[in-house]
Image 1: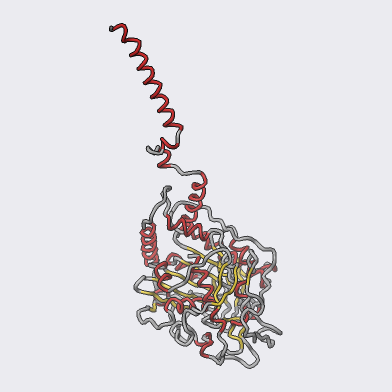
Image 2: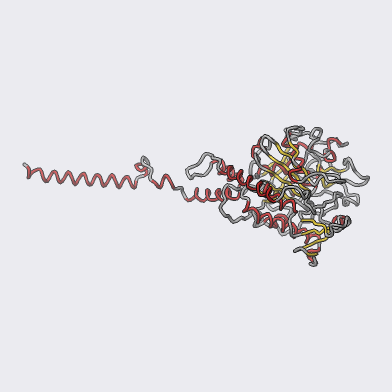
Length: 491
């Protein structure tokens, strides 16, 4: 009996061993069986396709300040070979920037360091905000936003009519809007231009509301630094956020930045307002050339001013650590008449310029734009949460002459010259070239604004001179509102 059981027992053992081997092999090879017990690879790894996308998202997050790792900043803005042919005109305001509008007793170095520490602490806290994660550990919200913005050319699109516009009334936004730009307060009677809204061709642009903007800019500061067109964009944004209402709760914090009206001055060097509920600060500083201006002989009231083409305005270099969003612009003050009238003398490397190529107005302007963008780009790694934009030039629309030779912009029919921008390259080739290869983004508004010749102040200026029309500045509400929509979409 015992001897007879040995062979069947061995056979049963062999059969069991074979079955176990088959099951194990099937478990390893079969997706169906392995599905029930996820392997370590399934839990912690992602497919190569998603990995590439996630790495792109991480790079974008690094650029926007969500990581403090060292990164190489590059720009995807394409270059155009055509030169910027926009002609500049003198504007009557004078710019004296020797002290950057800051009283000597204001905010010593220790105060700046304290502000910088507070700002960096705030940015670090923002970086710790959690969001839903996908299987790769990437925040879904950020991933969606970045993929939406990636490759979107907001400058390419068309103008459409939107009956919900404008977002504020030119009659009521009196605290923020200069009367000279509120065309509702002039003799102008056509206002169809106020209903036009920009629609990008290849992507959706987030709808602007004051609540959304303040939420996005909570505990942040946005600074406009530039000429009178930058001031228009600043005033437009204040009206858009408040809906044109007075808003007594909004605080004037210009003194925090030295933006106070000097004795005998017509106006301060800029303005700064804070929305206390979200601690959002919006400011504007007048720097028409984006150069640092210093008196050559401070003891002489009629002194010339050194116009340092390769140095940023003192105000910008001093307060950059406090900014979260920076929007720069220049362009329409670059002409010989303006420089002579303000007694501006070109300086490079701290001494008067002797280079003939730079002495040419276009050469000087290009050097200044490239210098300011290069300097800002060099500062961005120090402030990971800072986003910097250079706004392309706002087009003029003088027909049959220039500003001082009878040029006009009498057209009141919107989009009579077209309503769509199809080109991929910026119409401001100089600006596109300057930001190329940097982390400074181009706020490209030139081509879309070029279609809006009916939107200027024209002959309806409150302080108009007979025979002189303003075909440079825009009616508000108007085209600069769209600039802020495009800016909001890129924050």
